[in-house]
Image 1 (cartoon, rainbow, N blue to C red):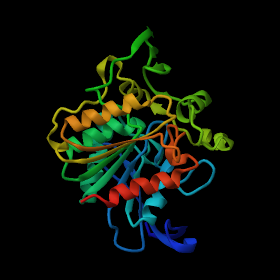
Image 2: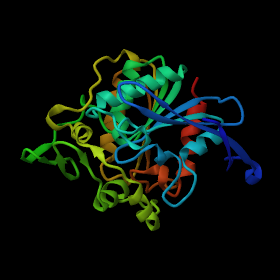
Image 3: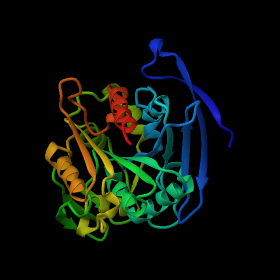
Length: 319
């Protein structure tokens, strides 16, 4: 597919002079098809970022905000980075997976993307993709130069099993630490307006609530097999078995101060666990007066550019 150039505003340039983004997309075969977009600056990239979306999303969540602003992908390109934006297998333009979608399958397919790219990336994962990131560091330490985990789900090593309230052949009701869930046994779980307003927006003081209809329209179903793993039903969440890939690995854990399911102690425990594996961890809980109030979707909130710039600055300081 030909590369197309798109004009954008680059951060930090006097007068906001426009830059250019080279943009192409491709599909990878494998155990399940994978769709990926590639965005490049108009010069040799200084770093490569691989952005992995969370649940009920596709890679489109990195390309724009519900209220129509450019997303983190374009912002990172404006910093001189090359950016890869895949859709999970079985999600969005990756198309049907042809088999049950599990965390193991997602990691296998994303690992194939890492090997296809053939060079180091900074792996940025959000929410439900947190455990995918830990497993990819374990399996491909030479391909992952650093890990950025935004409101990351915990690994099975750390996450407690939920309280099971009821089980039938069709569904299971569980009580998580903060929210109650009804999980289907098969097929897909469809995100509701309540999910959007309670989980994704929650107590955020920065989410563009005037764009909730657009945000709702962008939500996608989550495979039941993935959602039960995310909730660690019967101990099914992905675990890290080998710590050697984390030794000295730079990791940034970033969490909004108004994220309903990610209070400081939850994500700080993840940061401490990663440090215990030997990673060089920087934990940032966004509660200072200038950035307080972010919820679960910082890439869509009113200070999204500022937070992308913080991440880009951290990436730029990597050795």
